[in-house]
Length: 252
Ligand code: PEP
Image (cartoon, rainbow, N blue to C red):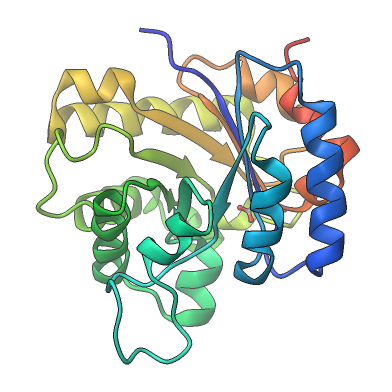
């Protein structure tokens, strides 16, 4: 089964509104001829409506880096899936390791956010990955098992038709240390087999599994060439439109 690659940029807490508009405008121009790769950028909530206007006629989609699972209510400081959808987002990054690490996000909270995203017709990108310590303790597979099983708890393959997974080893995020192609190939194959065990072969074959962790123009093509890698979630390098477009064009 062929899976359309997705290259997603996580802009984290960078770029003011005008900076985000300038970068998105340039990216939309540079990516205007790309038809065989899905492209997404996730600016801050604040920039969402501004960037949405710029991307409206383009083939670059918009996402958010987080959301809250309730539809509305007295939840000070939070933003709902319906609100981000109305502001132009199509994707939601859920359970990024920085959210888990700095904001105490649990698998249970992640699961609620995945469900709420699907209900609001957003495509969830569920982030999973082990820390350096967990890898050293040989716990990589059990950590991934737990994050996937609990993060998708009580969902079924029918609900998960659009779900994207992003394998992001925490030790490779923003560190310049990239997992080797051999490491990535083994983990992605394992994740696909786990999805097969939990949700069946159809979802396992169709689900996109991205790699994230210090993806740069120089290492993108060898990672993207791997059978079970269906794109990338890019942090630092997505902030620089020239570097990001080179990653998007990895196979050209
Ligand atoms: C990320 O934040 O999801 C990420 C992969 O960051 P970086 O590309 O900077 O490692």
